[in-house]
Image (tube, rainbow, N blue to C red; front, side, top):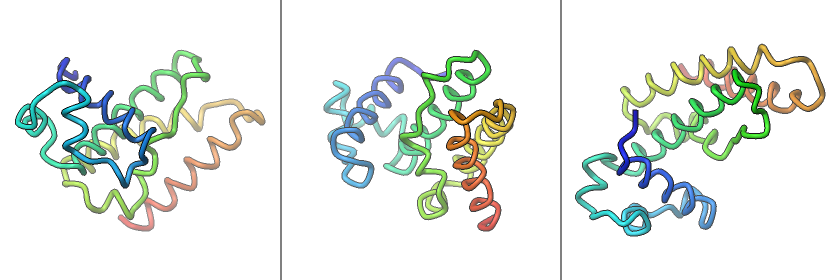
Amino acid sequence: MLTEKETALLDAATELVKEKGMIALNMSDVHKKAGYSRAAQYQSFSDKNALLAALCMRELVKNTEAIVQGRFEDLTGEFSVVLRPVVYSYLKLSDRLMIDSAFGLMLTQVRSLPDEENFSFMKSGFEFLNKEREMYK
Protein backbone atom coordinates (compact mmCIF):
# COMPACT_ATOMS: atom_id res chain seq x y z
CA MET A 1 0.00 0.00 0.00
CA LEU A 2 1.36 3.39 -0.98
CA THR A 3 1.70 6.21 1.52
CA GLU A 4 0.20 9.63 0.86
CA LYS A 5 3.68 10.95 0.06
CA GLU A 6 4.45 8.13 -2.37
CA THR A 7 1.11 8.61 -4.11
CA ALA A 8 1.74 12.35 -4.44
CA LEU A 9 5.23 11.74 -5.84
CA LEU A 10 3.94 9.15 -8.33
CA ASP A 11 1.10 11.44 -9.39
CA ALA A 12 3.58 14.29 -9.93
CA ALA A 13 5.90 11.99 -11.90
CA THR A 14 2.97 10.82 -14.04
CA GLU A 15 2.06 14.40 -14.91
CA LEU A 16 5.69 15.23 -15.72
CA VAL A 17 6.05 12.19 -17.97
CA LYS A 18 2.90 13.25 -19.82
CA GLU A 19 4.30 16.78 -20.21
CA LYS A 20 7.96 16.05 -20.99
CA GLY A 21 8.30 12.34 -21.71
CA MET A 22 9.95 9.57 -19.75
CA ILE A 23 13.50 10.31 -20.86
CA ALA A 24 13.26 13.98 -19.85
CA LEU A 25 11.84 13.14 -16.42
CA ASN A 26 14.02 14.88 -13.85
CA MET A 27 13.94 13.72 -10.24
CA SER A 28 14.28 17.26 -8.91
CA ASP A 29 11.13 18.29 -10.78
CA VAL A 30 9.14 15.45 -9.21
CA HIS A 31 9.55 16.40 -5.56
CA LYS A 32 8.98 20.09 -6.33
CA LYS A 33 5.76 19.37 -8.23
CA ALA A 34 4.55 17.08 -5.42
CA GLY A 35 5.42 19.65 -2.74
CA TYR A 36 7.96 17.50 -0.90
CA SER A 37 11.63 17.93 -0.12
CA ARG A 38 14.34 16.19 -2.09
CA ALA A 39 15.18 14.10 1.01
CA ALA A 40 11.57 12.99 1.37
CA GLN A 41 11.54 11.89 -2.26
CA TYR A 42 14.72 9.87 -1.95
CA GLN A 43 13.36 8.13 1.17
CA SER A 44 10.66 6.67 -1.07
CA PHE A 45 12.46 6.32 -4.43
CA SER A 46 16.24 6.01 -4.43
CA ASP A 47 16.64 6.99 -8.08
CA LYS A 48 14.83 7.47 -11.38
CA ASN A 49 14.78 3.74 -12.09
CA ALA A 50 13.06 3.04 -8.76
CA LEU A 51 10.51 5.73 -9.57
CA LEU A 52 9.88 4.27 -13.04
CA ALA A 53 9.50 0.80 -11.53
CA ALA A 54 6.93 2.14 -9.07
CA LEU A 55 5.04 3.91 -11.88
CA CYS A 56 4.99 0.71 -13.92
CA MET A 57 3.95 -1.37 -10.93
CA ARG A 58 1.11 0.99 -10.07
CA GLU A 59 -0.11 0.89 -13.67
CA LEU A 60 0.01 -2.91 -13.80
CA VAL A 61 -1.98 -3.23 -10.57
CA LYS A 62 -4.56 -0.64 -11.66
CA ASN A 63 -4.94 -2.27 -15.07
CA THR A 64 -5.37 -5.72 -13.54
CA GLU A 65 -8.05 -4.36 -11.21
CA ALA A 66 -9.76 -2.57 -14.11
CA ILE A 67 -9.91 -5.77 -16.18
CA VAL A 68 -11.22 -7.82 -13.26
CA GLN A 69 -13.91 -5.20 -12.60
CA GLY A 70 -14.75 -4.73 -16.30
CA ARG A 71 -13.69 -1.06 -16.31
CA PHE A 72 -11.95 -1.31 -19.68
CA GLU A 73 -12.09 2.46 -20.26
CA ASP A 74 -9.65 2.87 -17.33
CA LEU A 75 -6.86 0.82 -18.94
CA THR A 76 -3.64 2.73 -19.58
CA GLY A 77 -0.29 1.92 -21.12
CA GLU A 78 1.81 4.95 -20.27
CA PHE A 79 4.48 3.08 -18.35
CA SER A 80 4.49 -0.23 -20.18
CA VAL A 81 7.74 0.90 -21.81
CA VAL A 82 9.41 0.10 -18.47
CA LEU A 83 8.65 -3.53 -19.25
CA ARG A 84 10.89 -3.36 -22.31
CA PRO A 85 14.32 -4.96 -21.79
CA VAL A 86 16.18 -1.73 -22.56
CA VAL A 87 14.70 -0.11 -19.41
CA TYR A 88 13.87 -3.20 -17.37
CA SER A 89 17.47 -4.42 -17.31
CA TYR A 90 18.53 -1.30 -15.39
CA LEU A 91 16.11 -1.93 -12.52
CA LYS A 92 17.15 -3.48 -9.23
CA LEU A 93 16.44 -7.19 -8.87
CA SER A 94 13.77 -6.57 -6.23
CA ASP A 95 11.94 -4.16 -8.59
CA ARG A 96 12.21 -6.61 -11.49
CA LEU A 97 10.79 -9.45 -9.39
CA MET A 98 7.91 -7.28 -8.20
CA ILE A 99 7.13 -6.16 -11.76
CA ASP A 100 7.40 -9.73 -13.08
CA SER A 101 4.81 -10.88 -10.59
CA ALA A 102 2.40 -8.02 -11.40
CA PHE A 103 2.97 -8.44 -15.13
CA GLY A 104 2.17 -12.15 -14.89
CA LEU A 105 -1.10 -11.42 -13.08
CA MET A 106 -2.07 -8.78 -15.60
CA LEU A 107 -1.13 -10.97 -18.57
CA THR A 108 -3.41 -13.69 -17.22
CA GLN A 109 -6.26 -11.17 -17.07
CA VAL A 110 -5.48 -9.77 -20.55
CA ARG A 111 -5.52 -13.31 -21.96
CA SER A 112 -8.94 -13.87 -20.41
CA LEU A 113 -10.46 -10.94 -22.30
CA PRO A 114 -12.93 -11.86 -25.05
CA ASP A 115 -11.58 -12.27 -28.58
CA GLU A 116 -13.12 -9.02 -29.72
CA GLU A 117 -11.66 -6.34 -31.96
CA ASN A 118 -11.49 -3.72 -29.21
CA PHE A 119 -9.17 -5.99 -27.17
CA SER A 120 -7.06 -7.42 -29.99
CA PHE A 121 -4.46 -4.63 -29.97
CA MET A 122 -3.98 -4.87 -26.21
CA LYS A 123 -3.80 -8.65 -26.27
CA SER A 124 -1.24 -8.71 -29.09
CA GLY A 125 0.78 -5.92 -27.44
CA PHE A 126 1.08 -7.72 -24.14
CA GLU A 127 1.85 -11.03 -25.84
CA PHE A 128 4.66 -9.25 -27.70
CA LEU A 129 5.98 -7.81 -24.43
CA ASN A 130 5.82 -11.25 -22.86
CA LYS A 131 7.76 -12.90 -25.73
CA GLU A 132 10.34 -10.12 -25.69
CA ARG A 133 10.76 -10.44 -21.92
CA GLU A 134 11.14 -14.22 -22.15
CA MET A 135 13.99 -13.80 -24.66
CA TYR A 136 15.95 -11.66 -22.20
CA LYS A 137 15.50 -13.73 -19.05
